[in-house]
Image 1 (cartoon, rainbow, N blue to C red):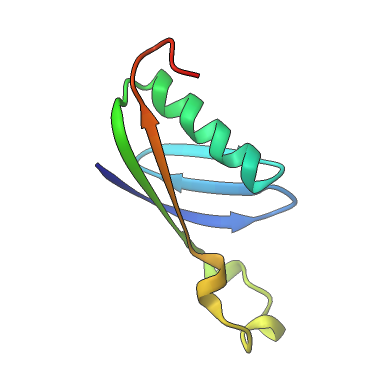
Image 2: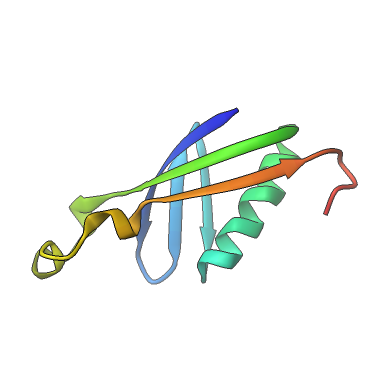
Length: 84
């Protein structure tokens, strides 16, 4: 299953989509929080989380750099409630 989120940074990483908001101080923490929240919401199996950066929050002076560096795909597998 693929899930799509919009990603931004406002002192912490914030991903929003599907009526959910996931945050993390680092990208690693964001990924862990994704897995925990999706597990709590009942998602199971292999999940592909696609995050597209919200360029309206992107500093204009940085637009010269490659925007694809800010898009991410994370693969998660959630097998059961006990899965950590």
